[in-house]
Image (spheres, rainbow, N blue to C red):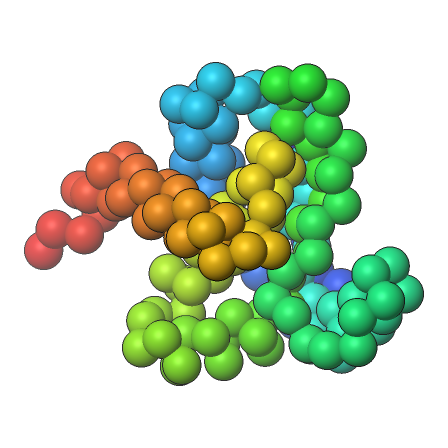
Length: 147
């Protein structure tokens, strides 16, 4: 199992990498999946728009694009995240950038788990699963939030 974090074309260093790995592992295991090789790449809006055009034939900005290499219950893939879009989303929804970043990170994992967000019902299910994963983060690291 290998969860890695990279950046492409931007200056960014994910904080608490070990905690993020533990969280993703626990989330997968609690949903009867096994982590394989998952690579997160944090990048710019423009880079993700270009990828969206090239690979999905969409000409718009997005927060995450996932390339799925999953085999059965072993989750593997590349998750590209636009930090610019994450910041914009955070402003729009009135949440912290860190919380929105985690939401988008787990959104990519949910795609690797087979979830889609094409229809309104699928979007609702995806949001519910994202919230469950964010609650798991809080549960795992609740002592970090005490003063």
